[in-house]
Amino acid sequence: MAITYEEIISDLKKRIFKPVYFLAGEEPYYIDIITDYIEEKVLPDDEKAFNQIVKYGDDTTIYEIIEFARRFPMMATHQVVIVKEAQTLKKIDELAVYLEKPLSSTILVFNYKYKTLDRRTKFFKTLESQAIYFESPRLRDYQIPGWIERYLMTRGIKTDPSASAMLTEFLGTDLHKIVNELDKLIITLPREKPVITTALIEKNIGISKDFNNFELQKAIGEKNILKANMIIRYFANNPKDNPITLTLASLFGFFSKLLTYHYLTDKSKNNVAAALKVNPYFVKDYESAAMKYNVSRTVQIISFLRTYDMRSKGFGDPGTEDGDLLKELIYKILHI
Image (cartoon, rainbow, N blue to C red; front, side, top):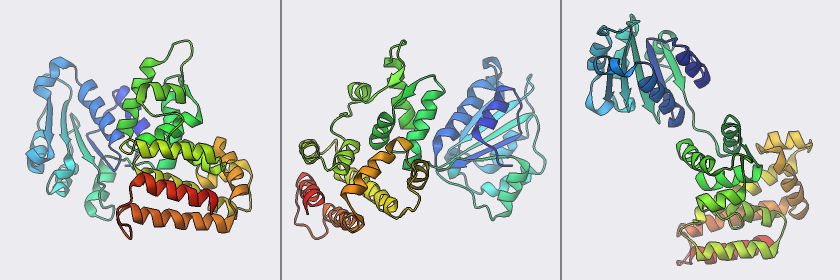
């Protein structure tokens, strides 16, 4: 049966165990958290030597795993069998034989990352009905700022939307990477004011709070020519830290959403936030940009972005430096 991460962890903390956990999906963060919890918390240390087995998909077979799973625990109520990197395990559908009658004293865990099972197969239907099947999809970029805010909120820490957006631009959608950086920031927070700000991020992670894709997008949306040019010059002087591909993707996302905004009939704050999949705090940025870039201009800019994306990849360009390409592009966006 399908189940959420929170439900699985809640049951594990209550020591409510299921015979089989199949943890799959493109986002490895929750898969690893559940696996690590079972590996570290289910058995006391003195029982692990005889009753906990950890194997890797490349180094075992499904038949060996079934054999392990059918053993009874030694001087304990449970044994734990964990298969890490289970996506490399061959003939995994042979597990169906064990699923027909799993041993209640065995906790069998499959850590099946970066992939999902074909829901149309008989094996999937058997697994879903007889075991705990958890699927962890990779989050989209627009979901990350909200995820960051919720993660920090559970730890009693506040953050402003600009800080969340800045972290998303820099860290992408890899939750392991995001959590690693957030935990570093948390350590630096003063107890009397646990708030993550853009200044704190700049100081501890190395992202400039003034010269980044988020600030460039904002400057262009406001048609702040001086600030946009300052940021582009900074990017040109620091190309390794500011790859053109990320800048183009950021701007393409912004103007694509701006085009959507133009065609919305209901431009109320909450409806715009839902339609554009942005924090309501940023709706004002699109309202402002829409006054400066009409529909035809927005379409033209999206065309510019596509052209410069191709040029940055070597199509129809003799080898112009990325910094110079960005300068040309930003000039066209702001002036042509």
